[in-house]
Length: 391
Image (cartoon, rainbow, N blue to C red):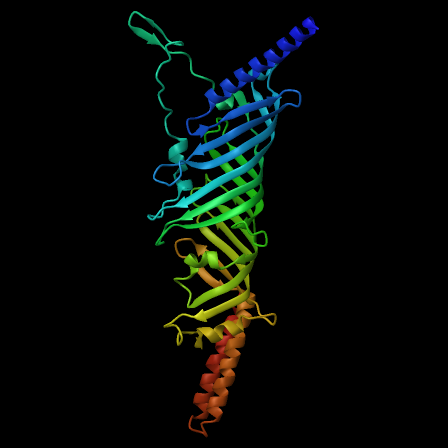
């Protein structure tokens, strides 16, 4: 039993040494902006876990870390004969991630400032007397650790489980406005250069819940080319049952209505190609309760009061449906009504024509036939313009 115990102890101690050595190499290879609490290896299953993974964010924002991850679980393959020769990571799963997206009052966004963090020069660490020799008044420092790309081969695809995105917005706000996307399940594809120092492409597909409410679902499919000279990105968002009230700071200043209730469902598509936008969107608002803001009671759109305008966009089920397109250069985009909205506006114009005919017929000949025909012709031309416009 004593010999067996000694063999077992040597076996266990050997793996503890390998685990410690591998973790030390990994830590020394990490850039200054990444911190980890610990790394665990399961040599029997060729599995590893990185605990307490954090990425430092840019300065001048509220949180030190832009991302915090409870655990990254993955498989691994050895690049050589032993684990100390390097690792190829497989099937990484990111668990309990929190990503903070923050916009300051001056409009700067922390994500857009991450280049300053990623490209910052490494900190100079004071020499360790144990690993530094001094001779003839000169110091010889210990050799630097390996680069991450020399020791680790990363995959492109990652999975996210139970993630969270916190959006903090101070731009044009009296106080910070916070929106959370919880329960995120997603896939991420990250194309990086060989040194893992630059992102060449990004894509993600997934879904989550607004402010933790499971009946408020937001799904997305996004691809992004960060190397394009101008914004190049394709994004599609599918929303279902999203409460309109948390979005109030973004629509309230432009809307003639004060909403007390409403849920949004629909599809938003924004495609950007070197600074040009092509966007097709359809929104359905259900359970809508609103009032006209003071001062907007007599405001008109298309010669129709804002309150009456809503009825033309309301379906038989009581939902308000609105679709629209955005096209052109981002510096001067153009807005177009979609087919559903065109139909609603056409119905409104038809009603206006009917009212006009009734008013003219009740004038007892006060207007001449030519002027009547001119007014009716103008209204008909307006209808044709909405129906024929296909952009």
